[in-house]
Figure 1 (cartoon, one colour):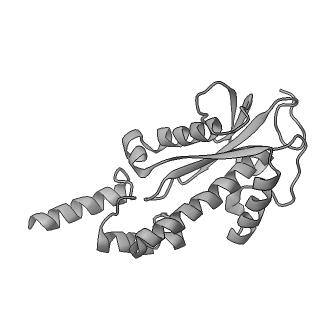
Figure 2: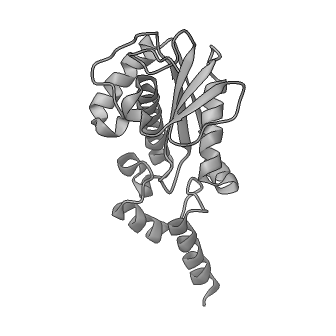
Figure 3: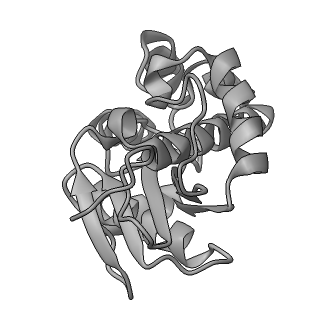
Length: 207
């Protein structure tokens, strides 16, 4: 496959980079982004969102949302994660992001080992969020969007500290979960939440 040297995408094709964030948290949705960058696009500092500070991610996200040919988000809720499992919910979020693009891509470059089904060719790229600029862009846009959603959830459920840990199983989050039990945004199929539910059920039964 002949690739555009700057973006790692098939030359002459409308290609979207796709990545997700939020597989590991105990609460909140998994969020995916799909991004089509201009051919030959270069942006200093563009890399995997996990390698960037929050401030740098937010600054790059502003630039990317303005300079990308187009971009879109997709998500799968905590309830969908529980119903489908996190793997299939992640692919669903990716599919939703791609289908939401105002320009239909011919090719997807997807971080990881699996790709969403749809009317497109797709290539899975392990570590692509650090090596393929369009996937890096999707990683950054998805991360900033999900962090914003979890900050909003903090306003509804302030006891859990979602604005600080974005739903990941930090000691503070686990302590809050143990004290207050799960909220509607917690993923009941994830082991720490399931254990918490059993504990509260047992305590409530008086046994």
